[in-house]
Image: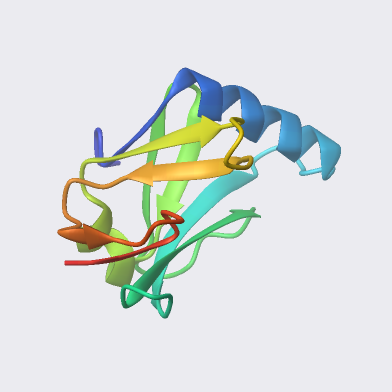
Length: 112
């Protein structure tokens, strides 16, 4: 378990629990956060629900939400805060990543 790798804001916690219930996630399910190549800044965030750990996964819990990150994404995400925005610019999860030196306007991709 790694402490404070990703912090989960209160509004994101509520949304995660709501979506997991809507999608019928089983007990023991968690939020899988990752990074993959793509987007207008070079790297994109991935956020899914999962229930199966994989080799090399890092697991931790913040604000009542279990979060799992694969080994490759781990260094890109240290210190990131997960929030949920329901404002006029659209609804969705927002990553506040201190490691990103450039992000795109939509907030879904970044570079380091």
